[in-house]
Amino acid sequence: MGSRLAAIATAFDNVYSGWILWNLFLAFVPLLLSFWLFRPRALPRRWFQLLIGVVTAIGVIGLWTRVPNVLRTWGQTLGNALIGDISALLRLSWLAVVLLLVIGLWQWGLSPRDTRRPWLWWLGVVVFIAFLPNAPYVLTDIIHLIRGTRTGASPTWVIALVFVPIHITAIVLGFEAYVISILNVAYYLKQQGAKAFILPMELTMHALSAIGIYLGRFIRFNSWDLVTGPLDVLTDTLNILTSKRPLAVVIVTVVILTVLYWLMKQITLGLKLRIHYARQGIDALS
Image (tube, rainbow, N blue to C red; front, side, top):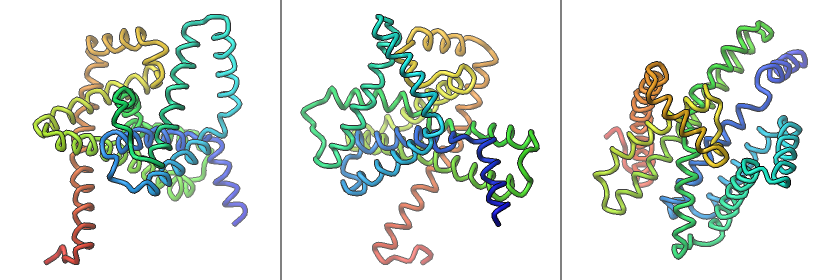
């Protein structure tokens, strides 16, 4: 048993290095924002606080192996900001915005959302859209499994019994976060009497997420690059939309997201209906 656990630990060190939990953390950020922005009364405050705590723990664990690199990077950023580097100042500003939103989410768990501050709501919407592509981005993380199996360093039984189930679980959880996030937006539009905009909203989210996935996987942009390098993001986005091969990849991604979203949407709403039936004492098979 000890040798098998050692083999699993070695395989994780060689293949993952915490990426799976960090990517799940990024996928859950828009999920939290969607409840705060669009369905603030859907979850009891205690459950929302628990969800924040779980997501935070996932992020900390996922980031733990990267702490030295993160500290070095942000130390350099702080040093550059002190000498007047605009890009560094913008990156620090983006970090401050994210921290303020995290604090705002936690405070909402203690008190109802303050509707007298619409600027905070709109700021949250912008951050929500910026982070949303991180949720379906987990679909592309299958590349880590491929790379891990190509090296031959991991035993076959570890790949079959550990890596594959972990990948499936991570992909399902990340994409489900994407589905619920968009469903929360749809709920908000319906409550505002804008039901006709739900389908256009869904397609727009799929298109923006497809572009974000391409920028993240192939161009290696991050969400904060929208603030630190907006011109670079805009230029690369225009290049994608005007180049045949990148545009084809984006279109295929939109189709994949649309189909998978529709399937997971039916499953999610079906489970919700089954739970409702169970609470009402109704037999779903009758």
